[in-house]
Image (cartoon, rainbow, N blue to C red):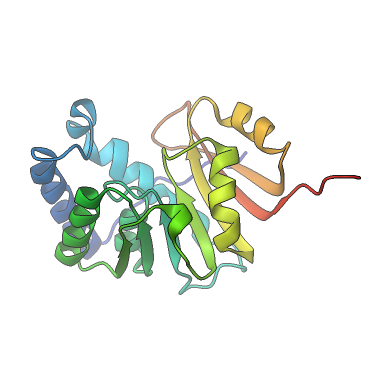
Length: 207
């Protein structure tokens, strides 16, 4: 199992991430974007944790350099908006909570991220197919794959950070889904795993 790399940032990207963190702290005083415990350590728990996924986009020939990212249940922008800032790629952020969607619009403006905000429930959206689909702390893996499969290109990948239940979720998902699975230990949490999934398809029933 390869280890995910701890990311480094150019001065420009670091400045934009600093602006994002400052905005997040201000908005969290008004709406529930991150928990109180997380607010004290936003960089490690959220920024680094999200940015480490960027390295998993660059070592596969099936993912073009300009591939657009879809983040399902984007919340406060983790991991999607952070990935947009770090990589310079266009990101589509799906977030049904209107207040959080408002934060994402403002954060994208302040941080000069190329982001499209979809303030709607995932199942109600009509979206094109994407090379990269990600989600963090949204739903168990079998449910995530149900959301992701309709909008994932045949040669696309899913990047799903998971906690201690990662292997149990994968076992359950394999009852309904077939896929190629790569595992990467998180650089921020020894109990966390990042799944990189390819060739995702529903298991065909027999009979």
